[in-house]
Image: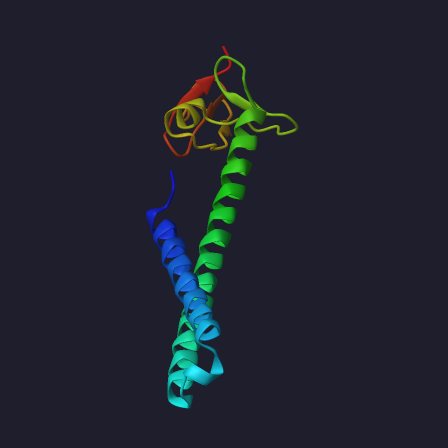
Length: 142
């Protein structure tokens, strides 16, 4: 989805550029002889004001674009991470990682939380299992 603020800023900047170009064209048309020194000075001041505003708008747009680029890179990294996880029927694994990820967190909220391993202790259950510290889900091997 396109950011309406960015579109408005671009539109406003283009309007300022067009206004500045029109001022320069008018100066060119009238020539030095038809304009008084005061008119010339006022037109140049208007032109300078517009150009300063254009520069400011472009700085703002650059910041917006950098923010969007960072967002794109983060989304690409998330997408790349999602495609590398494999499901074994109970939990998710990442190649090269010895600790699995919680399938409940991943499938419900797209969050990749490592599971913790619990050995078979009476207080934690009679069987070894993986559990999620985020959602408290428990996964047994068999």
